[in-house]
Length: 199
Image (cartoon, rainbow, N blue to C red; front, side, top):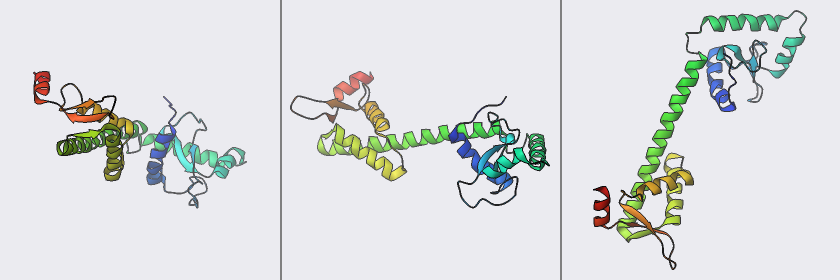
């Protein structure tokens, strides 16, 4: 069944199409001179059919020429290419396996990033609370966002806030305190409170 790919999925598919067919126009066989030159060409002219078998890279002008040629040379090339691609449905360039692989890779990457951010957050809070007795919540979050982006290239305020919430949860070793005269702070829980909450 034909399914429309998102822009992000098309972007990821680009390198597979280049590996399969080369960095050149499928029709005129000339290499692209500019990164904006290639378009995703649908061999069967159905723009909703984004199966990998049905996609090639081409110049926009060649795409237009395909429908205006009297000898239908490009139409014939497209038909033969689609047949050839579909014959190799078990090869590396199977659309479904491509999407599943990328989905798994993305999930694995997100998990890895989240774990690294949590480790950085936990170390920063632990080291600074033990050294100073407390840390200011807002300054701590901003500092950790910076450290995560500096060390691993990722780190959103929302993600770090979530990790701090975990570290200050009912069973965690830290808590958030605030009174009318001070800013919101993160402090170490008293041992008795932590022990009773875990029990």
